[in-house]
Length: 419
Image 1 (spheres, rainbow, N blue to C red):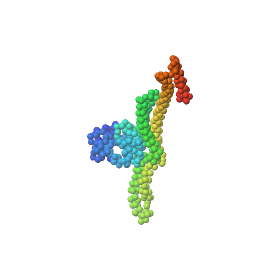
Image 2: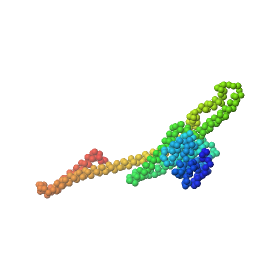
Image 3: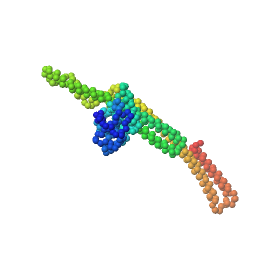
Image 4: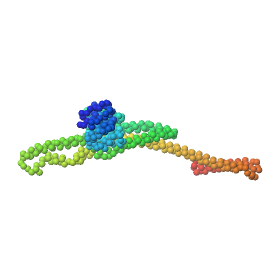
């Protein structure tokens, strides 16, 4: 990485534990003046410089300040891929295979993986710090051992591993908080418990969306063999180097072949093409698209199974995490159904009580009307009998009681009240 050599460390930038040197790159003559913190963007002077962490194959890490143009040139990436890594914007989890790099944006881990280095966006987030320290530790520990996976897949594996572990830990923490609250709400329905469940349900929805994005991205990557083939960066680089060496060999072999032909008798130029020239012409006829398909031909062999098995392992892990979230959502829905049933039962009881009160009010009104009539000051023969009014009250009262019992019997007959 020629752009990253011969640079000076910025003052005040903390060095990681596994770092073997800090590097600062001022591409346009400006610096982050007055700022000694990595990842701090100085608008107006830095012209888009950001703090990155470079990790090489030996496990050495360096802090760099790079602008977008330098990364685009070094990794052969379009600007839209770098926008996926911008922390100021929220994009879904993405894993993109490009010609010379893999663009990874998983939760807080945003990095560019090449065949021999990882350019990680510097951040104080725990996942980023853990990724840097763990990856450097693995590279330094296994430096002398032969690895089954190429460098880019080891970097991708750690990113997937930390993302799955982080999401699963958040799900477990949410489970420990949700289940007691739901059990308490089922026994005691009040405003405080309902507000807690509402807040936890919003957290559950947001976490489910994040896990679903990672799940869908891995599934989409597994379904596309071409995308997986593009991620074999080490193999593509080896093929490219072999192609370049073969091209140089034929170019160096042509003059000597020409000298041999010149010593012989004159022949027709058409018939003087040697076997090496024919092979060189065949190589020269390979178009860039064919050359690209040649470098990514691993998709047609067993090599693609290596990445596919790696993705399947983490797809199963993230699918298990997603299943936990769905189970938690179902438990919340079941609790809500139980609460609705209880509230519906209470509402039915209130309606029954209202019917009883309405019926009692009706018969009481009849009794009040009769007594009110007899309480008026008018002349009637019935008042000539001393006990006539008492008998009227008794008969009216018995009639009202009978009418009320008829109402109850009718409600029971219509199954308005449980038997």
